[in-house]
Length: 86
Image 1 (cartoon, rainbow, N blue to C red):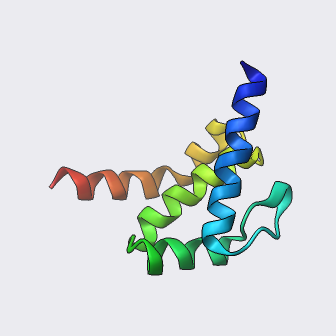
Image 2: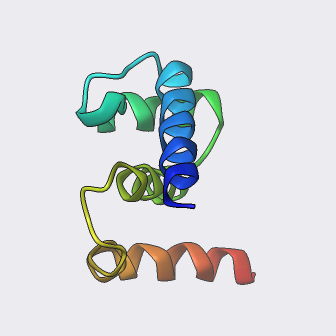
């Protein structure tokens, strides 16, 4: 199962890197600037939502433990969730 998950992560990160046109960071991940530009300009996401998806890339990349990402970005998550509640 762990091998399948690792393959899925690699495939997903690869697809995001191709879409962004950047694979300069660890394990072929796009950089923050390229990812946000792609997510905001090409996908039409607002900056907060683009950042939430960037956190998913960071989690897939393995830079942070999930609890570290949650703790450091809880205010951003609350802001996004509040918008969706309206």
